[in-house]
Image 1 (cartoon, rainbow, N blue to C red):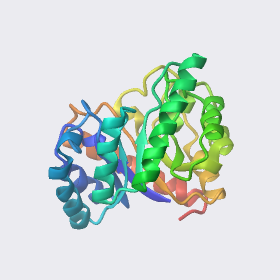
Image 2: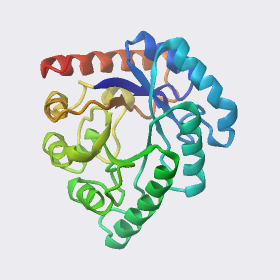
Image 3: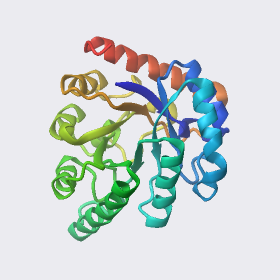
Length: 265
């Protein structure tokens, strides 16, 4: 498994700051944030201008470009994201499912929309991953299994985030085992409590919450998963550099310990 982090943790700072401190924390790679409102890292309307800088930073700081997060299902935005991914050399794009929890029509529409985006991903030669998300049409294991059944393209994968599954009142260790056959990306963070939001950024740091992340990573290892394990901490845009760095370093140490505990490193 490749240990990475989403640059959204450093959303209040420039891209080079994120690369610099994630490299210092010992990460293997990086996930580029194209999340509007949370960062100004990969601004899709200016991707041609930003792409050379991302490639330069990856080389300078020796961080593998593991993924991009672009949450919108808007086809125009997603096509820009895929064009940028091809130019930069990013293999995976993670997006949100959208829709509404508990609404069958919304779930069907979501699966159709994602299916159309997967056809676009096939054209561009990238992998599109979707994760269960609190409040969305795909929010737990049964709804994740629905989209897995509906879309069988090799350009599609599941992105698993234990914090969303935990807040859907499920056991993330059991949940990851149920969908592991199609998991191509993992967003990882901790969570204290089962409330709607993930909590303060420092409580999302791995090891600070209630989730059995050792057991979660053990299931990944035992099933031969060798893809990205990307830390995704949201809400830290107003945090100081020191706070962001502590969260990054603490979480990376916990991830490394989890890998060692299950014999993966």
